[in-house]
Length: 156
Picture (cartoon, rainbow, N blue to C red):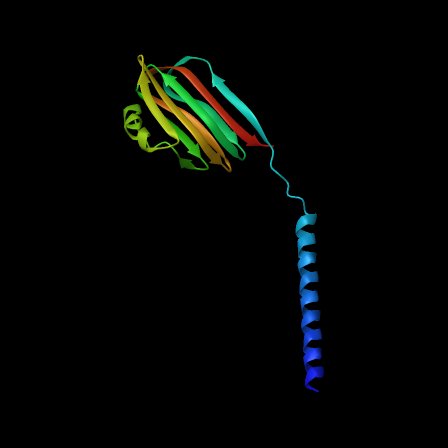
């Protein structure tokens, strides 16, 4: 009788194992049957011509999901504030002058700010966004913006 009980227990265990393996195969099949849809991105570029600014200059206003590859702004003066709103959050420390940005840029991976040959350069890179971004400058005097370039990837 003991051998019969042992045999029945082994059969029950084998049936439970077979049922579990079938369930795993079904789950595996379900997971594999839904191909993952990889997002596609298009690279776009905004480049403004050289211009003199007093007040506000909108450089970019983008809606959608994507990643800012690079922003480059070059001017002849520090008399401006750069505002980069990404998904509703200002990514450039609030109301910082270019001299303030130059002091903190060594500590921020995504921000470079420096002066060279009488020009002031701000470079921002590698920032992802879900809803979009807005980029503008507010000149506190008269500023000539010689370069304003934005390169970004947007989901299509």
